[in-house]
Image (cartoon, rainbow, N blue to C red; front, side, top):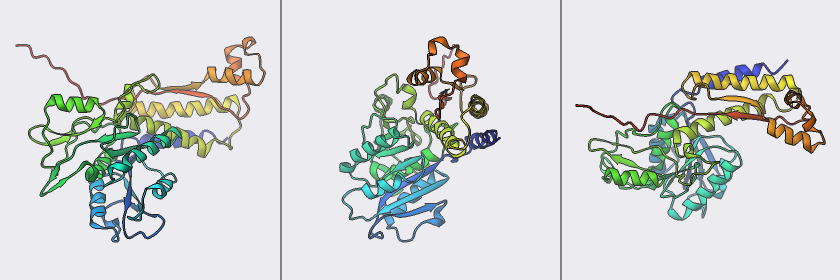
Length: 353
């Protein structure tokens, strides 16, 4: 029978959705003299897994990433004399992670990394990339622009601090936004008026803000500023992008691992798959990750009609049910409506005296 087992897999994936850091794998792309050629890869669950061969600067970046309590830190390390990051980027295409950053990246390489991250998302590999001073105008890029970050006796640039931001984002459960998350170890950042901070956020900048008492994230935004029909304002929120990435990735990988090439493409099996996806979406609704009653999967009638026309069938003479039940070869056409729940960020209060 095969297919019903997918229900169990989807249920397990949904149950993991709100665990702190469950989606939080951080990848750090580093240059280090300890690597003489090729790429070295390390997987860290905690500070005890730190490679002793790394230099002090890279070790500090790893420590910063771990402060956010991600589930895992993946290190991709190339030689510090490399003129570019190409070898490391090729390796990153072969592993899975949720947030990527390149600590201590120089400004000349930032645009290259941003273009690569956009290309990766377009090809279906979903992750967020934290880059310093990067006007990416894209949901895949987080433009971290705060510099002169004071931690104890040390002061850091945005490029030196990106690992801390990436770790913070990855370590949050999907029910929590980065907005107003406090960085307790940070003593000071350049003070901004609320108006200046609002302008920076509207420009797609992820900034740290001193509220007079503590340093916190002003708002958890991506660098996207150009809103279109295909990229609505929801893509400006890191929390929402993470949820949509989670849903799309879970569904795609489960189908790839348990459905493609293994199950007959009958109408009944299509309905079983759709039922499994709907159960997964409902579970995420119950955990307050998705907005209740607004998420569902169904056969994509428009795409199914288009396919049937392409193979010579007279769809105008067919009923809607006949179109749904029609043989579509190896193709399955499903549409999925998803509406994520945002966090409370904007509160208006009227006090009546």
